[in-house]
Image 1 (cartoon, rainbow over the protein chains, first blue to last red):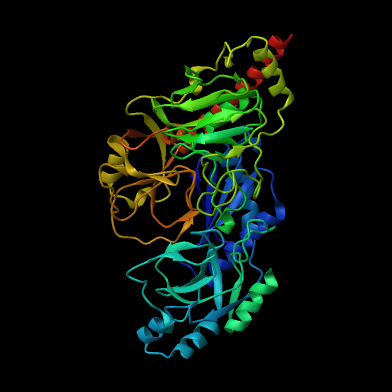
Image 2: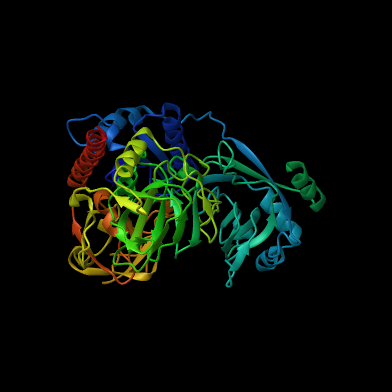
Length: 233
Length: 337
């Protein structure tokens, strides 16, 4: 595949796959991330995917070389990356996220509907029937940057951000939708809430979602929401 | 066990950071001044990654419930035990019942208190570091509070040898300091306008020639909007040649990013995992400790360094730190005889 490598610092580098975000570039980002996970090179500390990039943080002391560590890393990676191709038949992981829309869980649902000249039910219908891709996890632990929301339900951020948004809240900001994994302040329009935990520090993988996942939002009732929470106990 | 009787401004348990989970949006946290932290651990016979207490500007007060081997490194926050000043950058054996206090901040911004055996807190995602915003790691996921009781882990063989050497000189004293200390090479400069070496960042070419020049010729001041996450600097405005949007990508410890208003931000230990502002520079790893010891009001001058030289400086520094550790072990072996 086509890529460029550049230093990020004196012990990290960035592999860039393109300039614009798209599902095709995302596939390449995902492929490279998986490549590093499968190989677990001992000099790699960790990799961090971005929208069109993969950063590699490495330990220069674990790289044997007579030249400089960065040169050696590039020399090692280039032939491997040259050979790497996206597998067209690879099915992305689909993660279902149950959402109880509206009411106290989604206080801004009506505002989003009014803003777009839609009914509340139409907003729910459009939001829960979208095809979404997780581009990357960032901003907060487990927070997914999600692409693919219909512009028909886009809505500007609140002019007056809330000081506390409860964990699990599902929101809209501009053309993006997202789910808050932990309680934080924020200006997103809240349309619902999921009983699913997106961030579990005690778990084996602390984040429910990973870059490259596809998401399906599944509407649930308030009773089902309560049942989910009780079952999780 | 150590009991906290005054928490200080911001005191938290930190190690070298939580690596491996940044892809899940989990920040690394960890100490701000890695050099001071590593040396403090070495002086008490700990592994370099063992958790220490990071103290900020106004340190805490605490009581030691048992004889404890400690070392305090980094900024000089005027430590004293039962009223008597304690030297920095040394192994110190403290007697049970003694009170350690910190006064004003004389140099730097942060000090590191290492105890032999380390602080016995749970390891969360491979690290003992406190992740303040998410409330995980460290002591109950929080900064140190009044009346906190900190348990201490099992000291290493080397720790016990150091303790023995000091115990032989202690007598009835409240504490005893090692006669020797480390080379001053490792102690971050307390110059009034320190120089910090910076590599060109990934979007350096996006900035105007004038801004590129100003980055490396003028001074920047650390503003009061500075914390463990990052330092907001004040100085000449840095401008892009043309407005450009960039997609978020990974950032690193010491990344200098510039939001559209033109004042640079240096990203530090509690930085977010990714950022969407153009990166004009990246501080060389060897100079991060100098940056971490600056406090609001301090000035700094950035000096350009090539990526090649920054790597070589890193390798040289690591070699010296390795020799320092070996030197401490050797000295203790000789003195134990």
